[in-house]
Image (cartoon, rainbow, N blue to C red; front, side, top):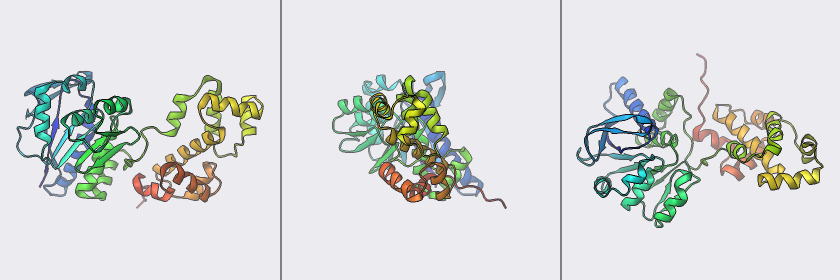
Length: 327
């Protein structure tokens, strides 16, 4: 029996918040159809009014019915988008959403859609993920909700929330796994050419992205050089020489400019390099440790546990895509 999913749409909703999760659910359904089974998901799009709704980017969605008027559903999904500012203050819209989420077995939001859920009160006393840009604002508006800006997605009871945009795909894959098993979720991820699947506890920013966005022009070339030479030993003396500074002055200025010591910075680049290899399906942990500059597996293992809370092997089992074997 297919699960009935109600996707609530509003003017200015973000298309990818809707289409990302919808692609996961529809792909799972097609796999069941191919196997001659009537499982999967039956998607319905609702809004305050019937007709068509214009999303961000001038995309439009045809609406099946008004919110809460398609009968009992198994899941309700709320997207985010620039239009959230207006709909949260729309009394009629919010009353419809509040009635719709009551008693629904799975309540899901993507990105800033968690703000709509918070406004209904369903998130009171719960921990919720949301887009990092909205976390502080939502925390101030809804003090009874614990908004966690660090997580990609979060499940608290029957309520599922996710961070920005593409994380809706990760959340949808986790729901497919919960509903129908890991094997199907992995097949869906493979067909959509996405990783199976980033765990919810993974930070919204990759370390390398954080480093790139916090980089200063002064050390930009050095940071590129570190990435290109990550398999080497990189003591502070070598980094200082590369930067044309004395070791002592280099260490002091580097901390001032980047907010972290040279050793910590190098370790984060090594971790980013290592986890990218693991996510791509490289299972030889000794090899990953060597080419990432950790030299020994144990050293890399300690760094993973300290930073991610899991070992490299556990990291692989969470969401790396296995390499295909030739037949």
